[in-house]
Length: 398
Ligand code: CTP
Picture 1 (spheres, rainbow, N blue to C red):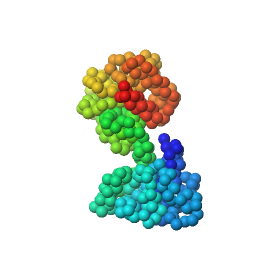
Picture 2: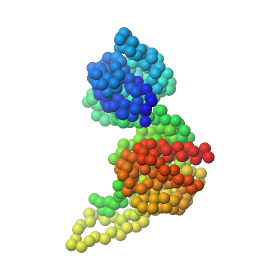
Picture 3: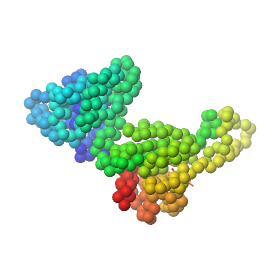
Picture 4: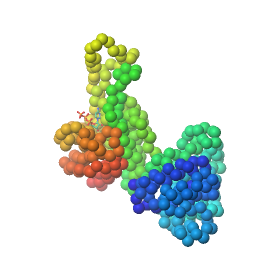
């Protein structure tokens, strides 16, 4: 995801500095060459040796250090970076940069770089809300600096509120997004993901094994490529992607209602959700009790086919469906493509290892309305998502 990229990771002095260690690990795992710059206060929280060991480069701490300057001077550090990520960014650091103060190595390199800079602020909630801080962040954003929103929760200072450093995975996601080409800007992409749950009684439901991973990967990738993204998600254990409008639903009927309402503002729709085809005809008001030794029969009633309905109101929209099959993959997928009036269908044989539900990879074929067939190898779902979006870009170009 980040191979060939040089990232300067700036760490300023807050308790969240320990999370920068995990962020560094994620950057390195994603293939980036990472150089760490720490402020003096940051070194009170985590030792440079930790960052040095994980980045395999000396950690830069001082502006006037002959040895560090000889190894890689601060200006060359500023020049060679493809991106600066400052995590955690304290109120003090943001204030200094906003005022043009360059009195240590981190502020000097930020000032000297022409690379994009992403700040991940972390501070006490009252500092976050202080108009002085707000003005500093607004000023930097107006100048083109990027900021992540802190998370809300219990803070190390004892207060509860906004100010927690975002999860390192979210910072990685934003970093990847900053490098992506913005070839989908102007599109509004509606993605459905996850399973639906069909209620049977107050303690039971019918559902399927969908994890939502494929749909969430599409939502993340589309957002990173500049699209406005709306995600209608059934119940999943996944974190909502950054910068995506998420509508949580439970049943197929709820999903239908949300999707039909949101389709009007969408230019592309990915129907990755595993919608339950049937729901219990009646929902028992009380828990169903087992009675006698016999079996229990349930009467199920058909759910609406949301994708087929979208196909009937398709208009100029690009409509992409999914076909999860256990047999006759291409034949079944092509039938769905035609019957549901789709532009593209993503077919996968869910019996293959490394494909389908609840795994991080997928093995898919893309069948188009025009009759083409593209077979993709086993790929991480994030990569599959980008390949699907490449097809959207090609379709748009005609
Ligand atoms: N789909 C839908 N609404 C349904 C059922 C499916 O929108 N009630 C969508 C899925 O989101 C997917 C596509 O239709 O994009 C195909 O879903 P799939 O479960 O593979 O096929 P079905 O059409 O349900 O047919 P079958 O279960 O007979 O294979």
